[in-house]
Length: 310
Image (cartoon, rainbow, N blue to C red):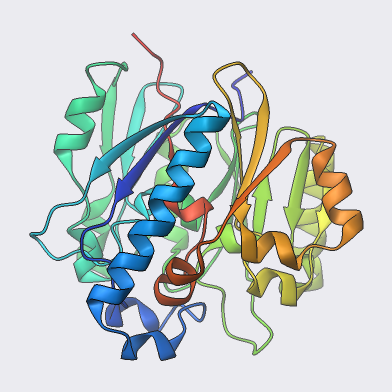
C-alpha cells in the first residue's frame, strides 16, 4: 500500500507576492482590503512568513526543497505550487490546467528536470490542453488525495472540472473519484477542495456542513469511514479560518507532523486539538499575509514529492 505521507516537500520562495486580481472572483478567501497594500509590503511580509515556515519545518526534520521564483514572468501566486504539479509514488508527474492566465506561468520544467537528479520520473502527464476548452483542475488544491486507498475527493467549482477529473483518474490507474459541491457561509462555491478537508493516514478533517446536498454529504462521510478514517468535523467558521487547509507530513525519522497556519490552529477548540495531537505533532506558523492576500494557507504552499528516490 502506498504511504499517505512523505518527508520530501517542494516549496517556492516568492519574489513578487501580491494580490492576484485574476483569482479573486472565484476565491472568497482573498481579502479585498489587501488590494490596497503596496507590493513591497505584501512581498516582504510573505517572504518573512515563508522563510519562518521553511525554517521550522526543517528544524522538525522535514526535507524541504526550496526553489526561488523568478522575477519574470510575473507570477504573484507562485508560493502555491501544489496547484500546477503533483508527484506520485508510481513515478508519474502531473501538470494541471489553471483558470487564471498568470498562474499558468508558474509551471516550470526546470524544477522537474532538477528533481530528476534525485528522483525517478517515469512519465509527465500533461493535462494543460484543457485550458483551451475552459476546463480546469488545479492539482491537489482541486483534489484531496487518499493515496493509501487511491481515492480522490473533489468539490466541483469553476476551478475543478468534472471532465478533467475523469481524464486524470483514467491516467492514474484506478483512482476512485468522490465528487461533490461545497459552499461557504454565503452560499458561494468553495474554490478548492483542500480548504474543505485534509486526509491523514487514519483520520480526516472535513467541513461536512459545507456540503449542502445531504446525499453528497453522506457519500463523502461514508467513503471516509469505509476507508478507515476517523472523522474530525470542523464548522463553516473554522473552514473560513483555513482549518481544513492542513497537511500531514512526516520527518526523515518517520514521525508525523500536522502542518497548518496559526489562524487555523487558533480556530480549533480544545477537544479538536487534543484529538489531532493523538495522530501527529502539530506545527503551525503565522501566515496571515499569505492567507489574506493570496487566499491560500499552509497546505497550498507545499507540493509533496512522492516520487521514488534513486
